Amino acid sequence: MSVRRPDRPADRAEADRLLDAARAGARGTAGAVPPDPLTDLLAAAAAPAGAHELAGEEAALAAFRAARAAPAPAPAPRRRRLTARALAWAAGVLATATAGAAFAAVTLERPPTPAPSPTPVSPGPGSDQPDGSPTGGTPGGEPGGGSPSPAPTVSPSPADTGTPSGTPAPDDVAGLCRAYLAKKPTQRDKALSTPGFQPLVEAAGGAGQVEAYCEERAAEPTATPDEADGSDKSDGTGNGSGKGKGPVNGNGSGNGSVNGNGPVNGGAPKQGTSKANGNGGDAAPPGRSNGSGNPNAPGSGNGRGSGDGEAPGNRSGGAPGRGDGGHLPA
Amino acid sequence: MTRELSEAVEAARAGDEDAFRFLYRTLQPGLLRYLTALVGGDAEDVASETWLQIARDLPSFTGGEFRAWTVTIARNRAMDHLRRQRRRPSLPVPVQALSDLAGDADTAERAGETIGTEAAIALIATLPQREAEAVLLRAVIGLDAETAGRVLGRRAGAVRTAAHRGLRRLAAMLERDDRRSAAATEGAPPRPRGDLRRQAPHAEPADG
Image: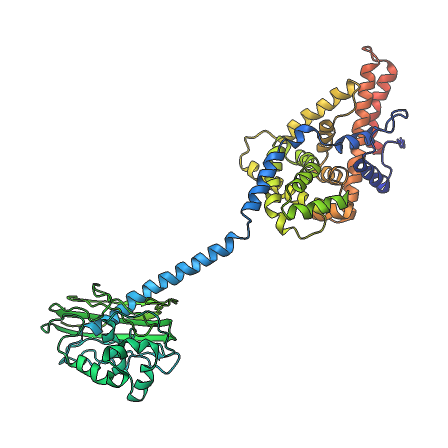
């Protein structure tokens, strides 16, 4: 039976023709001629829309409107920005906490020997990126002085570029003093010209008097801002390292542990009340230090943080820090 | 038609709602019919998902054949749907529903009416999937063989062959239906000639 029926596409070309015709809407050839059932079928398959087929029109339009109102691409960047901000924030908090340990040490400094401690730590003002890895808690352990304050590291880093950010509270002057004294004499004048040190200059009554002013303050038995009682005995050692960059970014880390007796109040001007871990500083801005000491903290802290903060004012300090705490045998 | 379509696409991308409505009215019937062949009774749902995605992704449409773009979305949605369904085997098999619809086609023909769209789609859907898709993309969606091949991930030649086979199969089915209906209309007592004609389909595989 080699019957070839007319309504069967003989080859692919014929099939193509039929398919194309269907799309073009050649429905049942004008009735008269016996309609080709296949053509008819294809035409029916490609027939114009029935009303029920368009039932979803409004839903589709609603989807279109919704998509226009909240374009898909937009959310992505926003989310990214948010996470970045959140990260920076978290890092800042961490850094602050970490740096605190270092500060705590500073805080505990015994009045008589305040000057020596900071020396190595604070990053030189001149360098843009003072990498202070002051580790070592220089002072650490100094039994006599009993000043555990190892690392002022973080705090004082006066931005060399001098961003005046944040007007420090008067208490900050103490931090500035420490930072100032920590500098090499050759760098001191330069440091004073930076906006970061302006509060100190103002407090001292002039650039020329800063040194005397600070030494005087240093000599005072009790750390100026706080009321530390001389009676504390704290021994501590701490390590801190800090890295500061410019005015705004700072890195610091410190770790200290202090055992103290006596009511010691952290010398850090700003936030005095933290416990076990001090609170670090804002490395960035001109020497604003935050710190807080730990009054009676028989503890030892370890902190590690990293961050990058950007803040004009005070809190900026991003500090990737890491510290190792000291141990203070009380 | 094509130019009209691409103008509408541009306008819709710029936010023109009427243009989008035009796109929907133009494309939805073909998509729905194609989806019916793929997923049976769930075609409407899958079509809604498809339009949702079209509306959302319209800004990322970078040109080319818009029909092919939409039908690719529809096909992906349909495949997702079938995968989900396979995980829930309790659902009725679409094929069953389709052959029911095909039965309706017989009814329509017997009544002497022109074959309806649904019946036509149902009949095409009884083809093996490759052939059914090739026929639908070519005849209903209106893609050429090359574009249909891109949608299906096959070469244009393969699409042509599949479409051709599908049409032959359809023609054979129609012929059978035709004879059956002819026999039915010729009267209750089937005449010998009718019996003879009914033999033909059985012999068909020999020459097919």
